[in-house]
Image (cartoon, rainbow, N blue to C red; front, side, top):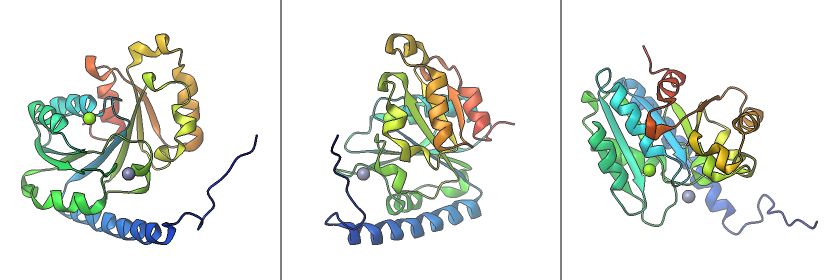
Amino acid sequence: MKIIKSAQGEAFDIELEESLLEKNRRLAEENRAFLTKKGITGIDVMGSIGSGKTTLISQMIIRLKRRYKIAAIAGDLTTTLDAQMLKRAGARVIQINTGKECHLDAHLVKKALASLPLDKIDLLFIENVGNLICPAEFPLGTHKRLVVISFTEGPFIVVKHPYIFTESDVVAVNKSDLARNMRVAFAKLRRQILTIRPQAKVILTQARKGEGIKEVIEALALGV
Ligand code: MG
Ligand code: ZN
């Protein structure tokens, strides 16, 4: 089959894009140093729309809120639905509405950090915009990256979106109750993820029922 590949330097906006990515990386480093100095652990949570990011974060907040002072930054194009859910779970929440942008970036996170009472926080979840493509290229300056995928995304979710896994620390494979109906095998997804990122911890979850949450917390080194 004939395949047309976009070569390096071929796309119109490549120069702009490279300086943009470079600037973002620099700002991300600043964010990470800043969070570290403040004693805050930052976790970037990435995944498609509907994979269960908000539900998983809420479940972690409920289990961790007595041990940590938790804040969350919710990235979304236009709504505050996720922010409201995270607030109900027990976190201080800042909403970032990105408008037409399909990912958060380090600059937006820096702005959000400025409006959080950082001395009263020691754990920060950042829910990225639901998207498996560009969030991979825009580090935010967190200490850990958690990717949430779900069985409803089908058997090719990992092989079609390899880049989101390349810097992931933990991958939650969510909606385990639907695996059979979707004819997707956990072992196969796990193998594909580990091929891309051998050091990732891959965990089966059903966030809505609270299954696998404890394991995700431990994999993120947030357990006692
Ligand atoms: Mg969400
Ligand atoms: Zn984007």
